[in-house]
Image (cartoon, rainbow, N blue to C red):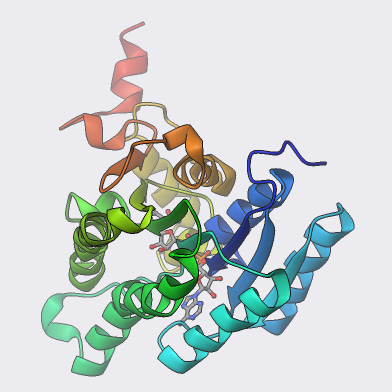
Length: 268
Ligand SMILES: NC(=O)c1ccc[n+]([C@@H]2O[C@H](COP(=O)([O-])OP(=O)(O)OC[C@H]3O[C@@H](n4cnc5c(N)ncnc54)[C@H](O)[C@@H]3O)[C@@H](O)[C@H]2O)c1
């Protein structure tokens, strides 16, 4: 099954039991990587690992809450123990909590910041001693269009995703001399459980999605694999020489100030 761009590489991917992380794990396995599927759900983890190993890939599930430094450290050690090294660290796990700023408790604010930002600190801190052993290593952090623009009622998510890019730049700068490149992939509207949960909280989910897509020039919802392809790009030498930057994968969302798909179609 291998296309080979990641042959001999070991990847640790957080939040790989669902959505973008799962799509990325599949792509990485197809490219020959051994994959550590990092997440909290044993059942989802087992399902993803089975899908990968059924196709001949090497994969393990490691249960880990990325807000707990000790669990993150242990998950990295287990990955290295099982596969003999670590070349690729993908910090994908993330959550959103939708409300106005004055409505958050301090605990709710801190939780989103811990999942989306502190987790990257923990993972890098404990992966560094392994990443530095390789001639080349790769860190990819998942931001969002919210890295660059605000969306309604997501103040902590927007703050955290801005921080993901700044942290990516900082890692890129400080660790370039160890052969480590670090970049940030920033997805737009992507069809994952996170998006569906968000939509299902609205009175008319399909109508809400259609309304959001009117704002997207390609008028398309991204698949987890669409985003995974950009994560893959930053995780191999296809992106040689690229570090400390971001790649927006958003079907054109950020390129326009205003867009109404139906009005544009009516011009034809
Ligand atoms: N779906 C979108 O439209 C979209 C858009 C922009 C950015 N993103 C970002 O992409 C990344 C993946 O999102 P997704 O849409 O696939 O979400 P998802 O909810 O479908 O999957 C997220 C994964 O992260 C895991 N996770 C959450 N908290 C965790 C914790 N404390 N410890 C370990 N794992 C944890 C979840 O269990 C899940 O496996 C996130 O960082 C998200 O912010 C998603």
